[in-house]
Length: 144
Image (tube, rainbow, N blue to C red; front, side, top):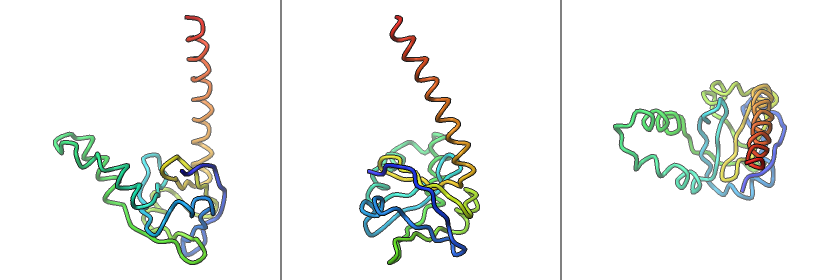
């Protein structure tokens, strides 16, 4: 399970140090692709197959299924951690997610995301909004 938020830097060769707790779960082969929220998604190959196997079972006539499959699969690449537990990110994916300099690696249960620090700060504002919505829903539920 991938948990936590880690702030780090990506170097000029697009290498990113992966937190030790994440390395324990990654195994030999990592799949990295575009995330759906202007970030990158990565996970062990086995988790990739489990997470997205269902997309292959959906009818290709469904427009949204095709679009999500295109985003995830067309940009996906297999990678391996180097001896220093770094992941080299493809240039095209770095450009997509505005990854350069300071970045955040966020655990999201069975996968992890890589965010530019700026995009992550904006995403965290949405987390606060969700917390307020959750409190509102909880208060309404208690009064019903």
